[in-house]
Image (cartoon, rainbow, N blue to C red; front, side, top):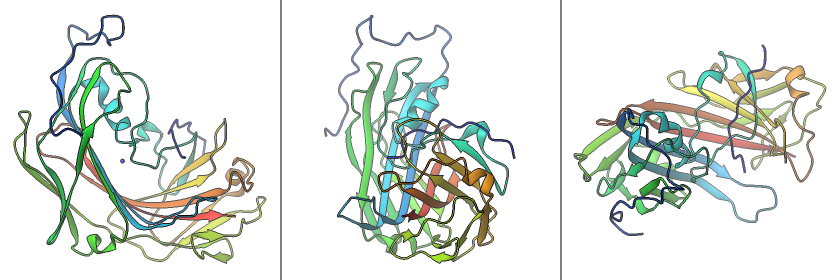
Length: 310
C-alpha cells in the first residue's frame, strides 16, 4: 500500500557479486547522452516502526526494523531512480512549511523497489562488499541480491534486511552502516544518532489502543497528540487512505511540540473512509547524514508510529 508520492501543493527506504555488465539491446536500452555526467550515489534508508498492522491481516509485526541500501555509478539525473529502487521518496519542492500540509497522491512508506520513470542512462549498481548495521555490540548483516529487472538499463545488487522485536537497536544511541568495500569503493563506516521514538497517543478525543482509534467526525478539526517530543529531528504526518485513483493523502510537516490540529477544511479533502479504505495517521521522526564517498543521497533514519482510524 502507500505506493507513490506525487505531490500537489495545496494553498495554506542472490549471488555475492553482480554479473558482468550486460549491454542491453539497442531497441530497449536507455540512450546515454554524450555529455552525461556520471556520479557515485547511494540510497540508504533505516526504518523502525512501533507496529505494522494492516486491516484484514492476521499477522502483526512489532518493533520492526527495515534497512534498504543501493550504491550506484549513475548519471546525475537518475538520483530519483536510485531512490525508487529502495522504495524511498523525496517530497522535494513540495515540502510543506512548518505546521502546514500539502495534498498528495498515494505516497510510499515501504522499503521495496518500485518501478518509476526509466533511467536516462545506464546504471551500474555497485557491490560494495559486506554491509552491516551495527548498534553497540549488535551486528546485523544485510542480504545482497540482484535488483529485479525493472529496467533494461539497470544492473547490479541491492542490500536489505528486515526483523521484528528490534527496539534494543535504538538503545545504543547511534546506528552504524559499515561496508567492507568493493567495485572501487573503499571501506566506510557512517553513523547516525537515534532520535526519540514517536508514539501517537490521541486522535481527536479518543486514545489510541492497539494501533486503532475511532474515526472522528469529518466536519470538525482533527487533533493528534504524541507522547514524547524531541526537537532535534524532523517530524512529519501522513493522513489519508489508499484509493483506486485520486489524491488520497495529506502530508504535514510538524513542530515537535506534542500536538497538531488538521483544519476541517483539509480533513474534508480526504477520501471517504470505509472498512476497505480506512484512514491511516502515521507520524515519522527522521534524521539524515551524508555518506562518505557518495554525492547523494544522505543516509536516512526514520522512526514511525501509526494509528488506523476505524
